[in-house]
Length: 441
Image (cartoon, rainbow, N blue to C red; front, side, top):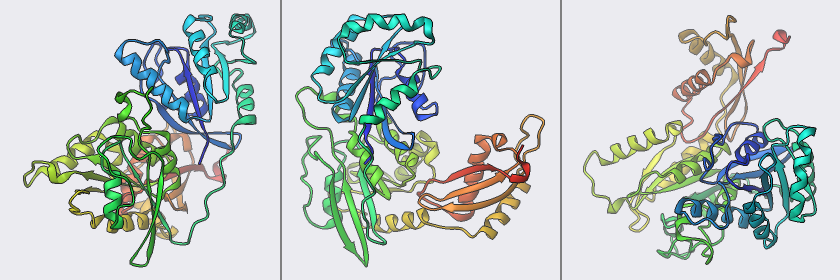
């Protein structure tokens, strides 16, 4: 499992800007306004071939009293507790703030490596602004400009010296299917696991947070071996508010790293929440096959159209996952639970599917003929050749004269057409654009 790095600091010190720089894409919302990032924001990052999970948090204020500020603080505390290393970001333009001193005092009680980082030092002239921060009495200060990248390499070189390495992948039996049961606390993950394996393996309790660690449960069924990973809920700690029970822990993210199929449980009463959408997004980013399972369906008042209306609402709320199958079950009564195995087998088959190159290129010619890519400025975009280079998830290399000219909407169009032709239900797709060698400039 990959190590975890968390970025904390007061509001508006540049945490999301540093987050985006390290993950090399604009994943966090960046606004010049305090308090924009309220939930923890997760992404995989890679620096000098070292992978890790990076967490952006809302503004951390130990003495926060307003309800929303308290929630932000509590989320940051959970992230710190689960992290391997902390980046504490401060504002070099504003100078040392009393709240920075409070945070530094808090971090001294945390048994984790902490890097003290002074942001917004855009050049040599601003270096004198760092002097003020030596009042903190910390071993070292790193001056950076998250916006321009200045000093970030030195910071990350220091981080890599003490960040644990990602362990080697676990040995696996051939044909083994790993399924992670993920979802918010109290949605029924442990009840479903018990129903799937036919015996009480996991403790079931109506108190959110009963499952404290990921539990691996092997099961052989009709000649296939499954490993079910029941992910942890929020740990019950006196310093963590009940408000936090809607937030998953990093252990759930780490379970997603280890699985082939992510089975995301939704509450039939509550529907798809923002947190569910974030779990699904992380599974997609990790290239995992995905199934949405709506639990407690026996308790929902319904008519002949309820199920279809529910599906439409989910599709509308998370449009990018229109390829994911949706099941309606009751873990309590066992209603439709037996369909889960067939669905797992189906999506894992799609996840590992490989398409012959000849058929792919015939499909490409027909697709481009019916809807050519738009111009890139005044330049015609030509798509020459496509080949599948990997499975799990299915990954394709597309050769073109203008990789930058193949817009994201057109790439999404190609993926929709791939699915229309070849299926790929339940699995994300990847398209890698390459310039044809004869077109190299």
